[in-house]
Image 1 (cartoon, rainbow, N blue to C red):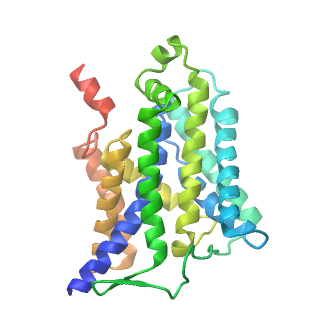
Image 2 (image 1 turned 180 degrees about the vertical axis):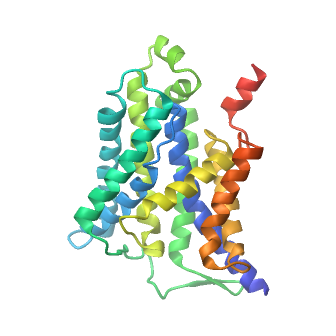
Length: 296
């Protein structure tokens, strides 16, 4: 394998891994606030890309993306208000099953509205044939958008959670919802905000990767599986580790193509998930909640 091929695989792995990391961050935001895994997270990614595509014929791309993010955020808020908040003392398992049902429902609605056609947003800069050459490896300018927006999301979330009152209130809910409520924090509002943030991040990711991966009604489920794998690999609740885990999974998948048929790419993610759950359920980078419980 030549140096150029190795570099090409690295760029491809980092790009795909960044997408997985953003989906995993959406998982972690809701998990930290509610303790549940939102398996409809992949559908937020799908909605962002497919809604933005619907608006591009009538408005500039930037406005279409913004409107798609706003609509998807509203859907995320509505899901929490209608399906989560209305439950009285629900078990975690019950809420997880509800999110699985919502994933199926959203997917079927998308199929009814947009049918089975595969769509793609225009490239943010350049075109499909435009490429940047780095040491002999060729990458699309859209890859730089994916990497840049992923980095921006991570930095913005770190600032939000550690340097804003609302972010600190959400962290307090993640640590102990009852104690946060006794301190005057509106925990219901924080949970709703977590769904809004998760949906918005998913929509942004869906719009950014659409020119590269294309968008269709059924793309959410595979992304949810990969995002969940990355969240487990990094340690549930640890969004910073999710970025490292996402890049690791992306690189493993990318280099596996040189050794195994393309069809086995998804098997690698599932195998990693099973191994982590069996041998190290806390993840490679154990979440703070698990470490705290062990020390307690």
